[in-house]
Image 1 (cartoon, rainbow, N blue to C red):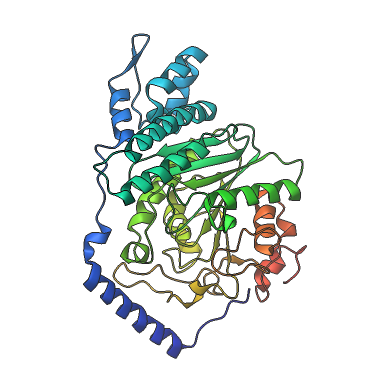
Image 2 (image 1 turned 135 degrees about the vertical axis):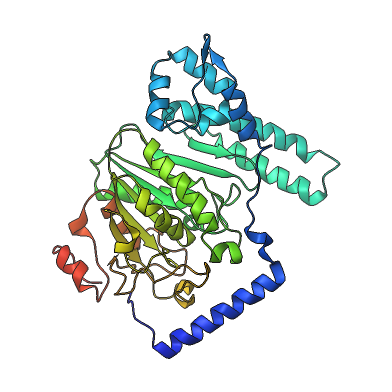
Length: 403
């Protein structure tokens, strides 16, 4: 990947084009696209409400929004039977509770998936739904069924609307290093995993990274999280051009990291709009976040890496034919996401993406982008291959060679 700075004339034309596109979007879709969706009647909200009025052996249950450490202390005070009872009574509440033991969350989310699967099976035969609605219910039912297969470790799950979900690969409790994949637009329950174009979906990305980390450092105890636990923008509309979805996602990402067990370093891998989420989150993330790597980024809501306000190493990569390079790197009135993280002035360490093709090819096996991600995830920084032209990166990691 070779980063270059566009001429002033080209930048100006891109800026004008971006503004024209924005005005067209606003004229045709209006600002309703950026309104928050209320979920007061969601199954998760109902489960949390039941938890708030619940008891265990005469003890009131703690505030589900309490700090993760306080909730961890509460669960540690219970015996195995009591914890299992809570996972059965309040599956969505426990399954999404940062601070609850991860194995208990897996069990609770298995229960929640089973309930959601039954709901969708009933909807498949509901004559009040259109044929299209019944077909979508069938797709969701099949997705939930797949997520319940033995060995799957669902860390969070919310069936409301397009849905949110996160899955773990590896032993999160014992991991000495944790990686989190943060995906971009059009991520939901139905696109969380794909058969075709497997490595463009969060599950495929995380599985590929987990295998690459195991290959790069067989003795390292690693875990990778496919994190689709935020409401991503749909398509390349107004939502994708603003930080509204990223603002909410950043809060959720910060909660995830602070609720992870242990004290092992955490690396974030943020693809496309996911890099906006990571950019917004960066300042408030805990110090255990050692690395933030962005791929195919439209910007991180900052002009420089220093403006992110994080002590984590910031990495960026983009392959030569990724269409994201034609998106103007600007921010006007809240529209756009700012500077290109692969540009020289931004100050990130720029990685080689040799072998990656297009906007979604960064986690494909055999690519240097995936190899670099694995080396970062295992702490093998001297094995990282910097992009051609990033002399600062090459000097810092003297064991690397330019691609």
